[in-house]
Image 1 (cartoon, helix red, strand yellow):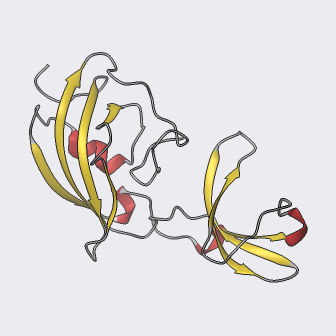
Image 2 (cartoon, one colour):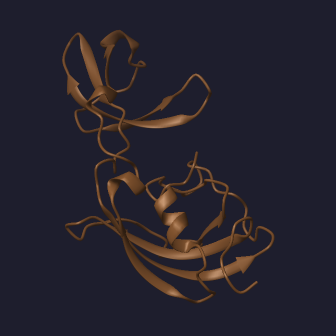
Length: 164
């Protein structure tokens, strides 16, 4: 296997930055990110950029919001009665918490308003509306997985697009 193609497993070292240069995620100090091409484990633009790359090839690219986490949607704000806050939790504006969908998936939500009666959560992905620049290097290409799959509870902070 010399080139990245659908169905194979690719290990990638990466660094992701915002337009202002702030690093939002990287693999430094961790295992490289391993994905199965075509399995929709990452944002589509990232996977598209990986296609046809060779082992040890490096690339820098910028994804528009539409190819990353989409545009922000102001309709994705929801208010909840303060009484639904679990006992012992001390919610603060700006805090990101994990909500569980009816299907059991974890979804990040940021508290944007808080008063005695209710709290308002922004359900947009934290990187929605952002153009993302990635510096990547393909460090492995295999027909089978070489790592134990990561979940959000085992080191992945989900900003790189892991599908949890």
